[in-house]
Length: 270
Image 1 (cartoon, rainbow, N blue to C red):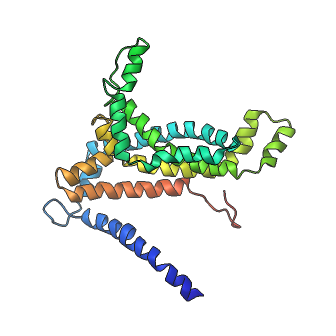
Image 2 (cartoon, rainbow, N blue to C red):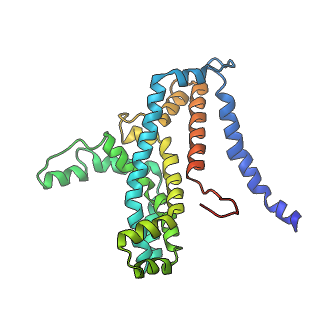
Image 3 (cartoon, rainbow, N blue to C red):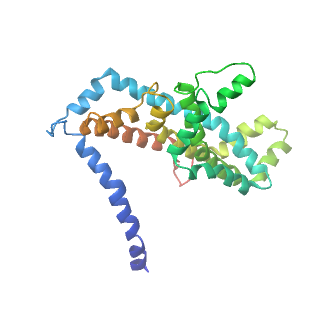
């Protein structure tokens, strides 16, 4: 039986080695070489000694935080409402459907909507506000990024709420708790793992966005993802691009540990 289990794990192990471990090793390896192909630690010295890269790092963290906060504020009430509906699976399907569309297609769709002759500005003209500069702004970047990431926040929160024992909520109300007390003392703490999973699913990808910064932000939003694209595709400095990639990977690992489940002594989850 153990031989069969080992055999079935071979495709997974090969996939892990080829598409996860090998790329990580290559990125770390490449980060120790300069543009001339010489071994150096200068890439890390340039990164941590440069105010430009540090500002990009802070920008990446700030925008990822804003995008995550916006998606959380929208997704938690939505997930709670979905858990109370009769046709919850149908609504979930409608929420998941946009994730099947290519990211580039969605970005170009928003370019059309936010352009000067787009639907958004036509609506503003209709209500008497007049055309506005919507595209190529920080607000449009956050809006589109949040729209794209929302399904990945809703799903884990919905699963956590759906698995919540209704008797605990009913007991809280029977004991005289208000709706806010029931939510803050019972519902939210018991669904916190879903929130953490959603934060991981949104915050981590948002750290390295680069396509949306180009197409929607119009280079007014500069993040580490943009810097990596520049170094790999424009300056051809793969060593510096890899160095920034290593920093992002380390940041993502730290976030995963910070928002992951922890076990107390005795095997209980926090």
